[in-house]
Image (cartoon, rainbow, N blue to C red):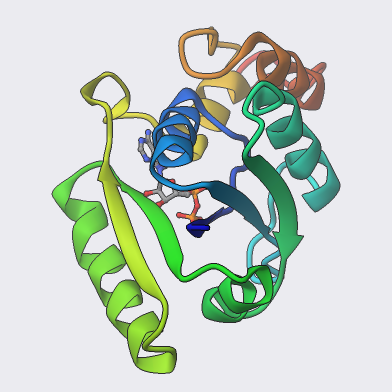
Amino acid sequence: MKKAIYPGSFDPVTLGHIDVIERASKLFDHLIIGVLNNSAKTPLFSIEERVKMLQEVTKDLPNVEVKSFGGLTVDFAKQCGANAVVRGLRAITDFEYELQIAQLNRVIDHEVDTVFLTTNLKYAYLSSSSVKEVAAYGGDISQFVTPYVEEEVHKKYKGKIKGKE
Ligand code: ADP
């Protein structure tokens, strides 16, 4: 059974993430999405909210599971019994950072390999931060996230749209 993890912040999950999830779920028998509980970042959504949104958007993918984790990615992979880490690559700017992390992870644990999926060109420009930026100014994010996530993002910014205070 081939198991992989797909770690990230997913604050919030975008259509770019979902594209990677769908493709990875076809490559592996079991895919575990690891939502990172990173104390160094102040996310818009709590860890529970991010897990819930991911569960909602992946409910039709039977071999996909969502968990939260803290600490090292390779440790999380080991706990899950996975020997692959899936990451998405959008642009060359992602590459340098991702290559470094992948090499570091491989030094920490040589049994865990990183598999990169290049982004669908449709979503190459898309990031969780740009979704939040557009929503913070009251812009339309319906092309970037699912309707469920759109609703959740709007709830966060309700009554505090920038430039309209
Ligand atoms: P992190 O904080 O770990 O970068 P993100 O939630 O921003 O977490 O991203 C998780 C993973 O998804 C990363 O590998 C990132 O490169 C990838 N990713 C983010 N946006 C896209 C996109 N639009 N298309 C493909 N992959 C993406």
